[in-house]
Structure formats: structure tokens, C-alpha cells
Length: 488
Image 1 (cartoon, one colour):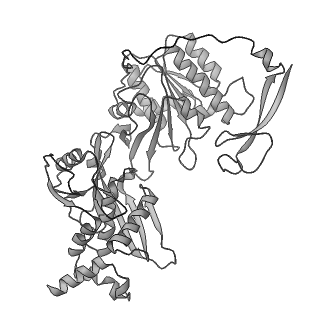
Image 2 (cartoon, one colour):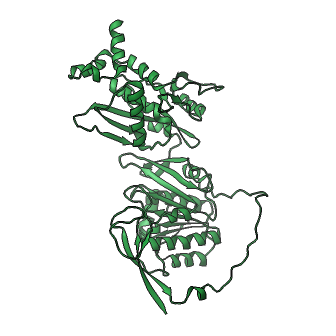
Image 3 (cartoon, helix red, strand yellow):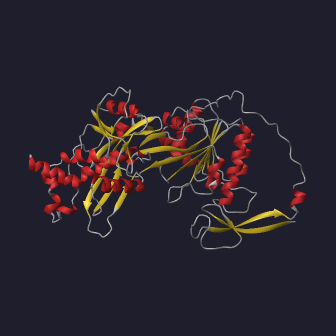
């Protein structure tokens, strides 16, 4: 006979407990434990595992490894993130906020692959077949030979795929709706998600079909469900974007068959997601070049240089603890830049609210943006606009020095292509490189602050004194600009 074992599983991390408790000790989340029942055979483990293992042949590291074949769908930005195309037998997990465009992108990719002669099946667990057809008609893809199904049972899906012609790609939308007969849990629980994903991964490895799983995300932006699913799949893609912008960014967080630092940029239009071949030009299309507190950062996303506008606003604070609001950058990195400006450059922002924004909805992760952020902060504080034809990149150290960053030639080439005439970068970063723009090297943040403060108008330097602030609390860089003006 079979016996029923009851356990409480954390729906956030997958940790199991014998009794319910309010807080998960593994991840620290509250009220995430759900009761799940597992049916096990009442046979001793020694009798159940009576079969002996089979010895496998061991091989050496020597030999030639054949590169994995690719299925190119024709959507250049998606193929770029995937590493040049989809690999047969691989499993991909795509996550993103609701309504960001995951289903739209996968319908377009399925139709593009089907038009190239590939056998594609789209399984929807959240929408009916008619709803998927309406989306395809809206995108103008209703003639694509894509197989549609609305099913949530994992065994039925695998039986359908195995009973027909060989399938090249399968889209499961979404993995949280799948359930298996082998476990007695509600769809969406940790046990069902893990079991269904395991069945689909096994099918992909046995048949050579590429399986794409759509995953829900939590309020923190992480893919919902157990983290073991992210370890089981071959690639994890994150579809990012802001509801107030039409840009969508596909970023690879894990990829066993390609790089993890590539991004794909899309624009949401009435005909679906369209590729953005030159994202730098799109991110800089609506910038205000004459406003203080804006700097253009020349960054790198994988092998692609991307120019984006950094916006900063520094305002006197009426609160005991000034606010620090950041969108699109690491808040801890901003705190470090503010501390270096205070300790090494005399730019005291302890009594000011600081707001930082990366225009266009792009999220920057590389430390090369330190120089552009510092320039935008000082420009906003002094009221001096930065040159409209200049780009900034460089990493700031805790000593106040500006350190070199990689791929400086590619950044400058992109800046010259977009019409920029000068670049502010670390000293010695262009040894042996033929720069196409004028170079302004800086060795420390103090040099950058002095150069910006020297261009500040006299009224900006006197702003704090007019508001009743004392001279001792003003930045030394601003005082230096005022004294220089008086002496002149």
C-alpha cells in the first residue's frame, strides 16, 4: 500500500519542513509555506533499490568537440542573446513582468522559425487557442504553420509531442501552469513546477527539441518557483522594460551555449516587438543637451557599445536624512561615488537629496559609469551644463583616482559614429589606439570636479549663500570657482 507524507514547502525557495511555521528559515520569507502531500510506496528502501547500477565508460579531455548546431529564427536581437541561434536539445527559461511582451516575442519567434521550415509547437496554459490566434492575427502572423495547443498536464503535452512528427522547438507558456499526475499538489507550487520542468527537460534531451519555458516573476523581479529550475535549464533570459517606455531589453543571466553579457533591444509597436539595430541613437533621441545634471555614458553591453544618458538632480534637503533615489543603477555604487566625492574632492552632499536616473529604462551594471555619474552630480550641484558633444566613462576608486576600463576603442568608435566630438576618460587608457574624437584624460575625480566647477556661472556658485547657507558648508570646488571668478 501507499502512504501519504505531508510536508510544508516554501513557495519562494523550495525548502521543506515537517510542520508549518510563519517564516522560512532558508530564505527569510514570511507566510510562504504551503502544505503539500506526496504519495510514496510503503516498501522499504532496500527493496525498492534492488537494481544495481550500470557502469559507464569514462573518456578523457582530449579530442575534438563539435560546435552545437543552431536554429536561427531571423530575429537578430533574439539570436544575439541566444548566442547565434537556438541549440537543439536545449531548454531556455524566459522571465519578465506581466504584460512586458514575453508571449508576443515568442509568438513572433515561433512564426519566424516555422516559416523557415522548422516544426514548432506552441503550448499555452494561460490562454485559449483563440486568444493566441487573435494575437497572431494582430501581428500579421496567422499564416505561419505553428501548432497550437491549450494544455496544462505535462504528461499530455509530452505524449502529444511524441506522437506526431519530430518537433524542433516547443514553447511552454507558462511553466507555473503545468502539473503532473505523479505529485498531488496544486499547479504553481514548488513541487509541481520542479516536476513538470524535469519532465520537459528530459524530453528535450532525449528528442533533441529546443524547449522554451516562460516563467512568472515575483515582485522583486526574480523568477518565481524553486531556484533549482534555473539550474536545470541551459539558459535563463530576463525580459526587462518600463511601462512608461516603449523599449524592451532581453538580457541573458545564464547561457551554456553563449555569452551572458549580451542584450537585445526591442521596441513595442502596434505590430509587435520590432528590433532596434542602433539602441544608442534611440536612447539619446530625446535628451536635453543644455540642462545641468546630464551626462552621456559610453557603456558596453557584451560586444555592443551603448550610449545612454545619465540624469542627476541634487537639491537641498529639508529632512534629517536626505533621500537617495536611483533608477537603473546600483544604489550601493551611488553611495560609494558620493562618499568619494565628499572625502577626496570636498563635494559635500550630506545635506542634499540626490536623484539618479538612467534614461530609456536601461539598467547599467558595469562600474565604468562612475565617471559619468560623478560628472552629472557635480553638474547638477554647480548648475554648470556639461558639453553636449562629450561622453564619459571610467571607474572611480576609493582613493579618488579614475581607473581604466576595457574596450575603450569600441566606446569611442560608437561615440564618433553618433556625432560626439570629445571624450572624458581615464589617463593612459588609449595607448596605441587611434581615437576618432578629442580626448580629455583625467587622473582623478578631483580634476573632473575642478574642470566642471571652473565652468560654473557665478550665480550658480552663489546660490547657497543667497539661500542662507554658510560658506563653511559649501563644496570647496564651488568656492574655488567663485574665488577664481573674483580674482579674474
